[in-house]
Image (cartoon, rainbow, N blue to C red; front, side, top):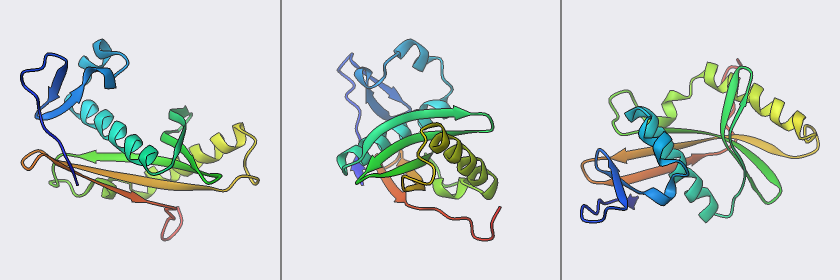
Amino acid sequence: MINIYQKRNNKNNRSVRGISYQIADFLNLEEFEKLTYQQKVGYFGQVLAKKYLTDNGYEVLSENYYVAGGEIDLIMRKNGKVALIEVKTRTSKYFGSPHEAVHKYKLKRLYLAAQKYMRAKDWLGTVEYSIDVMSVYIDKNSKKIKICHYENIQPINGF
């Protein structure tokens, strides 16, 4: 778990309901401030997931890759293998754990987007890749974050 805290006396820090972040973490603070609470939590989770992965040897290839019918949150590479990653963030377990939100329809859209990305890069069939899920749980009470990386996700009974 990563401990998070809030520095109330520093004007360079802002807070999303108790979750602290540095203004420097966000390229366009004006746009960030317009986001809904859920969008801010999702963005914060993606920033944390990217940091976790880069700290563990991954290289960022792309973020928020959009294609018709889907989006890939993070595209990373480690040891020549490309990881196409869906990041799910929750601040409550009321609706289940973050990774439980990746249902078979979301997974299907992720697979289609991954194939389109690999085809666009001319890597399909030549570069090894996997579909991964990053689960980011932010406990606002204890101010701790739990990050889980589920690698090479496969559908149980197909799509």
